[in-house]
Image 1 (cartoon, rainbow, N blue to C red):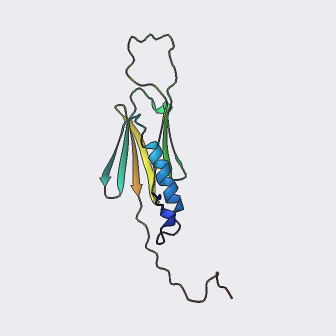
Image 2: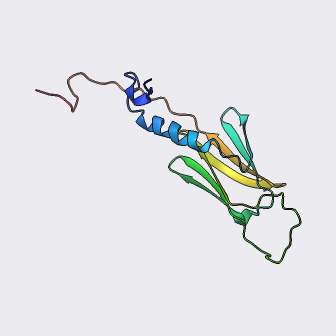
Image 3: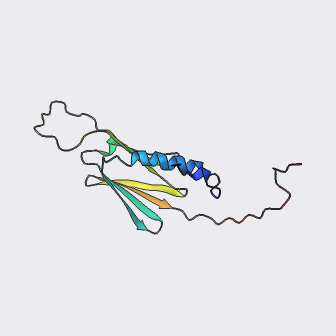
Length: 142
């Protein structure tokens, strides 16, 4: 059986990056910590909510790297003298990444009741109409 790729389809020109993006995203889909929600809060607005119980704002970092929203968490070991009889609240470091489409930007982030909210907004794309004159291309061959 042959693997169908975006780059091999004759009507999809220049979508090789999309294929790499789909492959990379499928690898991170199996991560389950921390749990999160994604909701549409308006026509062009979204909210990602991560359950980050036990993390402080200083323990979290939010960056956008090459159209990837990356949320990292690392708790500092404040008190090594604590003795847990049961430790059911995860305290491990994490990294969650989300791919942002063109025009989607991070509007802000807030912490509330152990939940990290990252708000996103999509700006409306401008419609561009371009007229191409025949015989004026740079790729002419003689």
